[in-house]
Image (cartoon, rainbow, N blue to C red; front, side):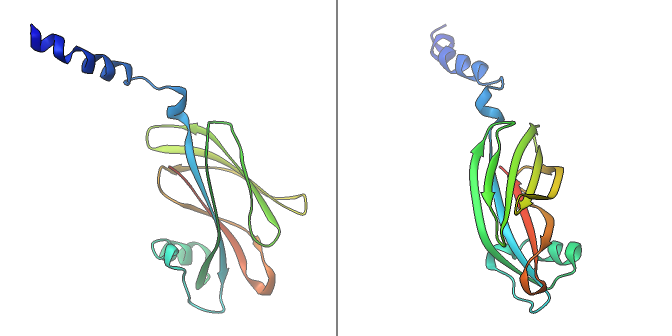
Length: 147
């Protein structure tokens, strides 16, 4: 009987933690501004794992990570950040499931809508999205991740 009573506080904690709380729905959003180019084959060290997928999806040869932003947000709580080349992004987590997050992405340049899309991505995995042209025929790609 003593063993059962001794384990009771642990059992209560396990049962209490089994449900979802409001904090369980929060996600950390990562937003990376990537300059894509055909002028070289250079790839930023942080992009090594993404490089093959980026080349296949976007037909560029070089990829430079130019800016990062990261912050924790609840469902339907927007994260706004400046990108490069005068672009600004707003990311809003819409729905979280066990292994994925639905994310609304809106990008503007000079107060003009450039991109408005909703993606569903695996937790902890970057999803690259083409945004628009930069100077010198380069191109802006935004890679987003929820973790």
